[in-house]
Length: 325
Ligand code: ASP
Image (cartoon, rainbow, N blue to C red; front, side, top):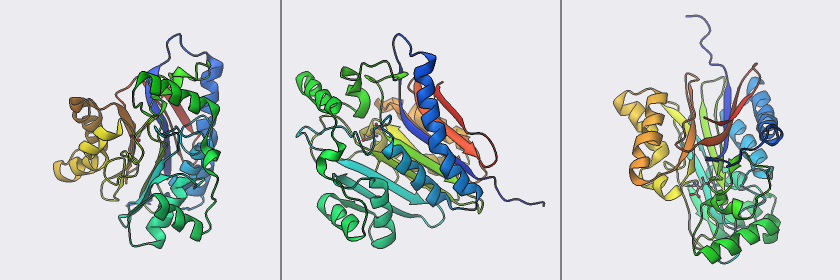
């Protein structure tokens, strides 16, 4: 056999949704493509230089958390009580180690706190004050609770309250963000961000971060920080990061189900991912999509909405980005 080292690969998503009525113009779409490309470049370089898949997905999600176009980190949605509660997770496919945080409201980049849980505790999931205390003790950047607040999100909550609905993340955004800057209809868009990667040693990793749902009940946690639901990584099968109606993704253990179909049923990554997104989730009304990569470098990015902000970059190749089908 010649050199069988895999070509490193990073893939990211910034939420799934429906094409905007009255279609966005090319300039507006360009802004999203440019942001996705900019975010892909540093983790692509990291992987090309021999960095780990774990470092690459954390870096990608931190950049997504900081980018105002995507709803994780700064600009998080409000809960019913006008607070912010952020969820994030990370998983290392080489060791099956995982870390996650739920309901944090003072950690600037929740994915770093998730990694801290994995690396500095014997636990997998810490929530609320306990998670924040760990982050603070380890010197992660803490912010005041209003760091995440924006006027637009506050207005979005007001509208959701008036409609008496708990709205999925960006589902409510177009009630406010009617600016023509979003190619996907903000009324129908889901807003979690995530990343999956394969490194040169053949290791896989996945990470996911979200602000959750507008007007969600305080204390609600979705699929994003639940290992096996919104995030999973196992070198023997795949690394997966999901976005969509979190409760349904939890009910079918969506991310792990893909790995299980590959392991037990011998399905390819593409077959397993498509079954879960196009059959299993719709059967219970689940909407959204996911990104997944396997140890051979196969990539799958299915969604059952009209679009999903997404992109990938293999080492040595130009990043590719897409929004629609
Ligand atoms: N899955 C996320 C949640 O339920 C929402 C999303 O993807 O936008 O919190």
